[in-house]
Image 1: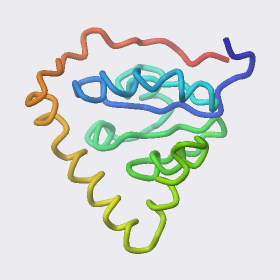
Image 2: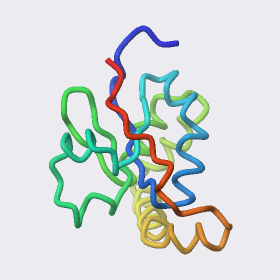
Image 3: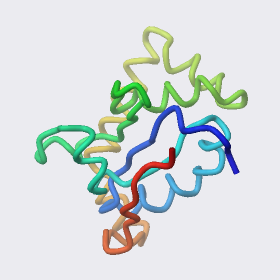
Image 4: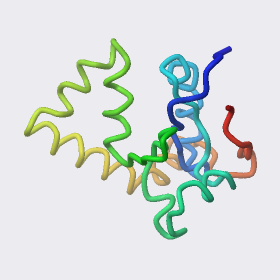
Length: 136
């Protein structure tokens, strides 16, 4: 168990079967780096982000402890930069041409994540969402 407050929260769409499966799968790795996870649909998240409902679920988000927000492909970069074995992927993702490829791949997947979830048979219900406040 970690003694310190998280440095940030990786926020995912709990209505996406892929997201519901894979973000919690990586929770232990993320927590070792100081990040916690939470569904974007959590009450405390929607209050903290102050993002219009129409925009809330468009992207994976990272809410940092100081209130700054990171979204989309930059969330992956922010996290990969802090994991030694993922650092080479981070380095590739910031190379000039590969940055565009990484961003396009992220956007394409994000826009089609519900289709991917259905194709993979991953449940899309948000009924089991954890709705708890962040740990201090």
